[in-house]
Image 1 (cartoon, rainbow, N blue to C red):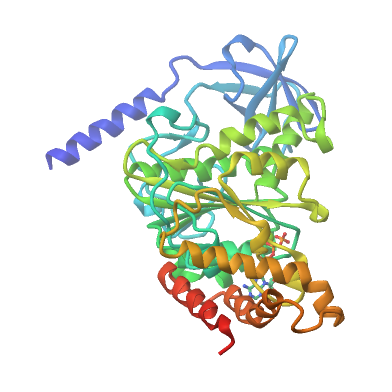
Image 2: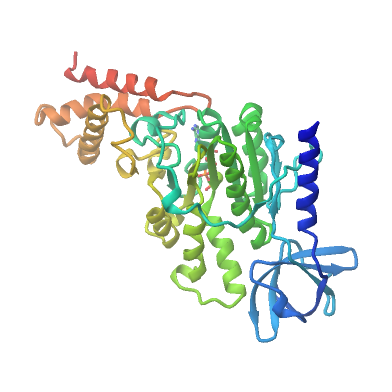
Length: 447
Ligand SMILES: Nc1ncnc2c1ncn2[C@@H]1O[C@H](COP(=O)(O)OP(=O)(O)OP(=O)(O)O)[C@@H](O)[C@H]1O
Ligand SMILES: [Mg+2]
């Protein structure tokens, strides 16, 4: 009872804090492309601040993204339809964010945290989690924790990922990124999954939720969705909200698995915003703020200052299978490891199409049980030997018996390849994975 009252009071106080002391209004002076120019009390506005534009049928929410001369430049979170010259623009001073609570689990929200799953209104928690926030200070952060079971053999054994680690999944389009993410969401031993679908095709969202994630996967997840047809600000904000929700569950002491599909679409949204405000395009049309925003976003995943952790898995679309593309390059430099998926492997029907030899987890070998490390090293050696000789073996140019090492690789490869293949429904723990791998290698004598 007393607690209830204290909680109520706290809610009321924080609601009061958010009330603007003064109503400040500007006017829409011009609309150019996606940009709204606002004249008036420009000094009361700041970059990142929200503005509400009154139109005939309601309001359009916009964000200030820059200034030019005596005008503020804003971009809308929705359609610009109905915005006219002279429309009133109210400056909103309250920090923008969400008030999540445990009841958000199992729900699907848009980039501003509004429910989009038709399951009714979302209960609100007491604390405001801002969309944009600095990562915890490096010196007070916990260290990366012990291994996190992700349920996928290839990753658990060869690319062991720790609690609080950040990994990238790099692949061309249609190679199986989204399916792999849904496997991780369903099979991980993390307490909670926060999934950000940033700039996905609308059709794919339902498929992902119903076919890939399923009821049981959704039950302990929150999904943030901004489809490709939504304005750039919404797509960018979906990425921020995904991290804000992860921070909420982390602060509650949970081990959170945060997944974003894809960081490339976040970068593209930031590029669209940058270009609209007049930033110069540099690498492949990406503007400089893309490369300053990426680390600010990705660094928010990781261990907290207390118990909870955010383990981050971010997909990166490598267009034309060019792994040196600027966003891929920048992301690879920020994260603690990368999982490379290859079209050639998918084409021969082995899913998940992970190329173990090109993938790394930077916490290994520390994160690997010392008893299992020799197994991993040997399995990698066998895969490398096979990869070196693959062409010759296929062409029939290799003569059996020329090298004992190659003979062994040829003998073991089918079993290793079958080990790396895993259907969507299957889940294998870290322990089971190593046991199977050890068993495969122990047959190396050929008996
Ligand atoms: N584990 C798997 N088992 C069987 N088939 C799979 C598996 N993973 C992916 N696929 C096949 O690959 C197709 C593409 O997968 P997915 O949609 O995950 O690719 P993507 O990389 O996310 O593509 P995009 O870049 O277009 O988003 C799937 O429709 C499915 O047919
Ligand atoms: Mg996809």
